[in-house]
Image 1: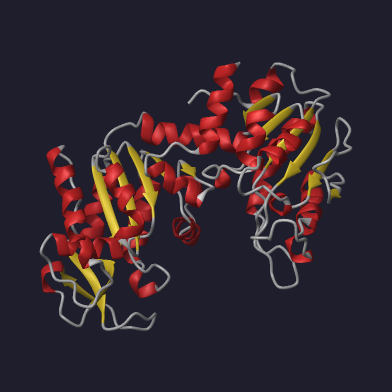
Image 2: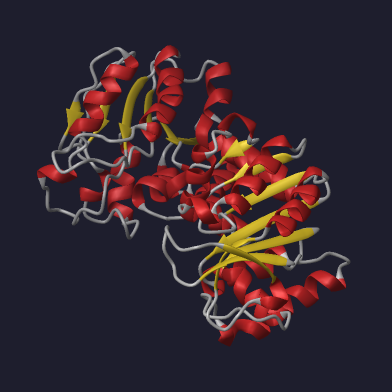
Length: 398
């Protein structure tokens, strides 16, 4: 995808003395006292800010935090804790500016944090008046928040329309590169793992991938619906019988291309959904009427591990079992470690996927870990994200 990048502007000496507006993703979790409990997103935003500061820019940064009501400031919606943490990470003061749409004072070599952008009226609906005011604050707009790339809001899309220059920051550029490598120009075989509780929430993703991938691994409740489509019993397992025809259509589409959806040959069942429920391995054809399928079985896990070892590219979204319960985590762990050991380029995204990666300590063995949940899913659906579209359009305009 052809977009202008902040690194391009820095290399060309076009940032020095300029006013740079960075849309970051600083939406971090906090406890009831407002203390940040996990700062990965803040740390991930630092390279972009440092790049602009080192190039001599006057830097403004903003982000959303939580779900505030536009025009109604509450202390719990403030980015004040983020400003404090950002100043620690950058090693310099990061003042927080509350009412900033009408103008911001910041000098080259300095950085300010602009208060929660979703407090501005017109933000979520991409109001033109607000977007133009934001654009007037800067010489260069930098989108570095992939987690918001699927939303056309004033601080993510409108400002990119009207700013003198609009470019991708290093985080967003890395996402574009990883997605292109995994989906637009993959090394084959391309294997996708899509898991979750319901087919209905991932149906468009499955349908889109069915025309692209060489292997489509389904897990969780989704796999149970596919087991039904294959004529196998699932007992009391979570499934969507009404979508069996759609699951069968995905399987048929894959088969017509010489590809496949591997169906589990064995599963791990329990009488109830609980961490202390007794786990039993059964052949898929032997699942009883009172059984609940909570994981793939060891033979299925080994079969999938072999396919992942032979893959050229792996796209991973979702654990294949209830990995939060140790008794039903072996399938996900086997798949996770197979991805980590594979020579394939791997891209992973989604909250549960990232939790599994962290649980098994394989972060350094995944080719690229996507920072955006909803945005990552929309890419898998085959959609063009608004952020990508507007940045590509601005790049084409010169």
